[in-house]
Image 1 (cartoon, one colour):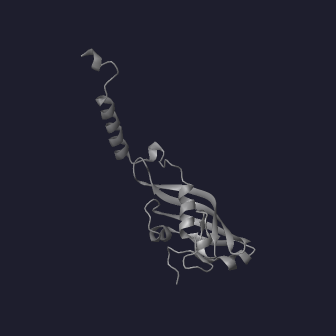
Image 2 (cartoon, one colour):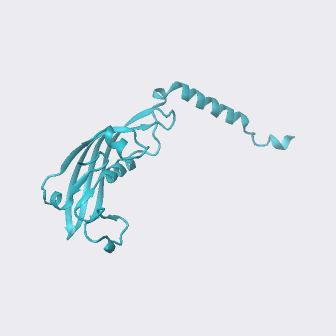
Image 3 (tube, rainbow, N blue to C red):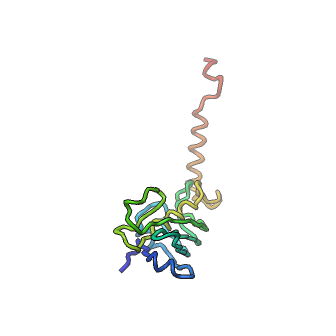
Length: 166
């Protein structure tokens, strides 16, 4: 049985298919994968596998949906839309021959490859660097506290020339 943190595909079989594989991921996936950037979400993932050369595959990931991340300002949950694409290069042969760091190999050899972390990375890298609510949607207590801290920092700064006057 496959664990929630695994998305195993048979590269050889998937490359022979004329249509993309479609999977849906939910909160369980983000919990099971063992990370703390994304707390939940719902994603539709299309997976298209092409064999480029003998035992060399390109896996195209197309991810759409939404994920929940902490707001960088107030730390409350923030739902962000996701629309991302990415390619993963996988070599199913002997990993001793792989010299390119961008080429991945199935653990234990063979044609079964776990896409879970690749889907997570594609999703995470599509998020903006700064993830914040509109100011009116942020936790008002946290916004007030941050405003007080900003005012205190400004009051504590010396104005240019003030130190010279003493």
